[in-house]
Length: 477
Image (tube, rainbow, N blue to C red; front, side, top):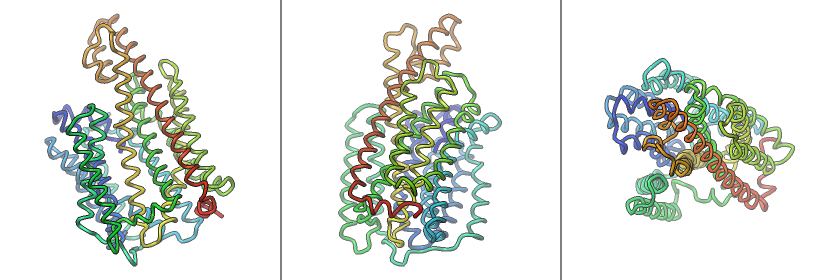
């Protein structure tokens, strides 16, 4: 989810993709993953979650080889799409297996905390490993490293994990599968292109096709005897809130990673590896937050801890909204650490809600809905907030003399353009671009803070009448 951003300049140089191809290289993984998660969750309920986890792992390893060894943009896009399909088989299976393996509430809560911290760890370690590998190897190594991990995973799952199936699984209805793919891919594609390139008839029509397909999918689930997606799950207020929080916590975290990695490298001048290492304290605190959530929820209650986590995230983005010029590394680490600690508090609890609020036979489907929220949050975090960041940055350069199209495209482009100018002109361009980018971070962080405050309000209103039900889903008595 976070490692590819470091590889884009390198693979662009080697494979020379067109702008449209580059967009698909970056986006197709999230598109396909989000569109197939619900299907994979239902498939795991039917054929066995361990079996699907093994098949998905093997597929992920093979797709990683295709991507790593790609010699042209078309092969790379195909490999990324296959990664999305295989990746969709992994996460719902793991979360559903936790429900069946750990029957005691305390053990399950601890297992979910480990699971949530692994998600945060992977997101934050992506830039670290990405930077490390790119300093010593070619861009394909970012994907080739998946292969030994997959081999270890398949062996461990086969030896250690028991099989688990649903007694009454949902149906793998081909029409439902097609409608879901036709809903999610066009909707995400339409939103992203409207925000990035401005409104267009093509993007609007694409989004409308997705919206109509989504309506038809929902109507079909309502009439099927065994629906692929149990819409009754959304009548459970804690479940709805959990999916919403999963989506928007990752929306905020990935957006922060997107612009902080640029700031650390382009403005402050850090190498990719050092920039990744600067984000590690946030990683550590996200893990701490995941484990603290269990104990704190037992004392304060579920709703209060969810709001506490959102409060930490808002405080972190408020710091970024007030970031001083130049953005000292220690200040950025502190702000990002608050964001990550808050997300850790939230995600440990929300994922426990997902697997405990759903009936045992539907836990795979419920987990896939939660994972779809994660993926949509990650995709839209970069698309929407990245577009806000870009628009404000470009507005800050309007009217400034000597600013080229390359410099207006990105802050990294501005620094690259400055390196080819005489010292005085270079200094002016660097200062102008840094100021514009810092202001863009201020505005983007403020927007994210407002979004998170709105999510907090929805959380309070949704759980107000569900206090007993919500508290019953806490991680500990």
